[in-house]
Length: 216
Length: 216
Image (cartoon, rainbow over all chains, first blue to last red; front, side, top):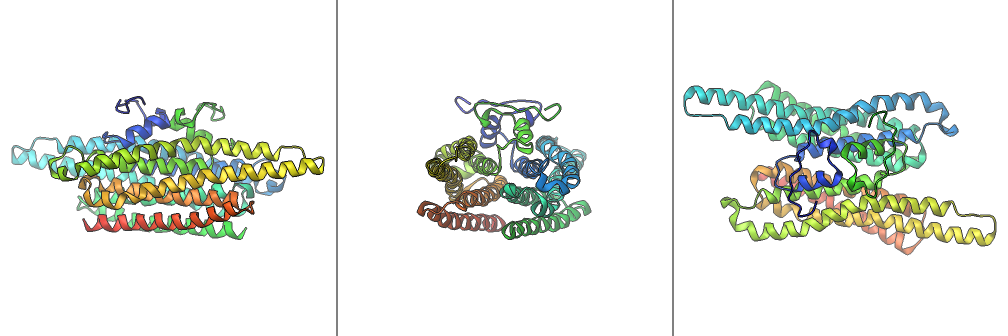
């Protein structure tokens, strides 16, 4: 973008070009931030798994895996879409927090209302990276089988899928914590625990995929 | 993209929308593949570092760090740009390999010429992820200082930067190996060694950044 300072407003980050997205991410605009980048990393990981599956279709050598591959592609498509949409949802949730913090706090009643609104907004903002983490973990669960049965020429792309999904999980985990740290609710504690568990699981899957690929 | 099958041809992946890029990455188009995704992950990581730096400027609390932050932003901008351009360069290098493999091999002379062209194309294709890895490592080197001196409200974004740059390095490493495995040259061996070293360094920097952030 000439000058590098123009701010782009579109209905969805999905309709921004790669260049515009990177320029806005690097700028002093509050979104896309780390939560949006986590979601996009997950979508990119899912896309690499889908690519490897697509290159396995219609090849005599992999004919026996065709029903499995078709099911995998059908399962991955909504996961990638949901991760892509989460880039927008993360930005919307961030706006919600800013609006809640901007509420008046002149009276005790104001303060109570503001506190409630902030808790609700932080909880909503915590749910987006939790969803990203769940989706990234769901996509990562498909990878060991794809590493075993997918087109051998695409194994480096399967490994990149595993790396990107593990990074998405880890980045989502950071963003769950960024919101849950200011919350003292059962939901926040449950999100923390699930975040810990799914991040470890996704990292373990990425390591397993790496080992499977080096064996093949 | 309605129907999900339309193939988009643009002069640069930078001008594709996020949606188009993800659709084409997930499809049976050969690019963008794992090498392009590695480069984009690096650009996203660099952008998060730049965002955190931008939010540190003009704040009284961080005034003493302003000269450092301005230098950091100036240093990061060309790194992010180069990583973004590497998405295209990776696709061009992939085409080069396909063209080399398609050369005739009827005579011994043909075969020798083809072998030479394939080696040259694989070497060129190996250099793109090596460049991505170097750039990701270069950006990651800036993060410990940013984690110490940057705006405390942006620490989760600095941590996401570290995670994305480590993922970019790891994914680039996979793509160096994918090309170097078919090469028996001093350059390929040197790239392998540098790949190993810089991937480990970038992972260590990501861990260091995580620790620094938990201390602050």
